[in-house]
Image (cartoon, rainbow, N blue to C red):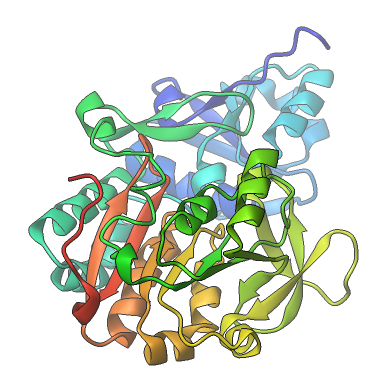
Length: 385
């Protein structure tokens, strides 16, 4: 099996006029079917295959894997529409099927919009555009919207090791516009001179917390991180300890006090779903409104969050404090297409007399930050200027 080659493609990698079998009848398969219909009508889907299902799906026959060998003359390529594409391709290879590839869409179906989706959500997008602070913010949001559409001319799929593929901007001038420096991401447009009490949801390696503790006027930053200090470099941990301004709380933030299954993946670790029992693979989730009462701080001045698509439930559990204390907010909103529209809509509709801005801090589609700054605290500061 040493000669097996796991390939991973997007819609541009499917040969013209191909006959394909879509492997997987879950959401990835459903979205892949819609994607091909809208962007690659030249590609013919002949049937589906699935490890556990048989019968039919959307009018297509579902073939069991063991029957694919006898049907190989009916298709040119198998597109594996599952995040487990490596395992599936390996199994197919073991029975003599060598024309199976991982298909990008299952990895990104919750990340990118299908071409017709932006039209269907035009009202929401227009609401966000009209509420943004400046033409610069609107232009950036428009660019990010266009780049997040499957088949966008703005981005291309960058191939890396298995499971690490990502979309990046094609034009270097776009890449070069987006700083990845800590002082820019999360703190653009934020007036740090008035921040004494801060909360960071998702601390990971402690770099942003370390930056905050370096601000002279800061009294304390509470970092909520289910993985604790696992990824803190020794020097960072020592500096945070020496500052006397950092408190690590090894819990996640949510809209209820819960236990959750947790997927460990370094900086991309995420809550998989709520659990009935606590064990070694679960984490404790708490409500920020309640935690801040226990901490008894005078007020919350700044809330920053990068918690892998848990930002909306976190904000739901923090809204009383946000409305009362009117902190500056820097919230990542790139982890899913629902979050990409949902976070701006939520904050724009619930917060009064706030200024809303957009920041983007990577050469690809990750690291987009939504800023909500109370008008009375907005100084017009831009760390990249």
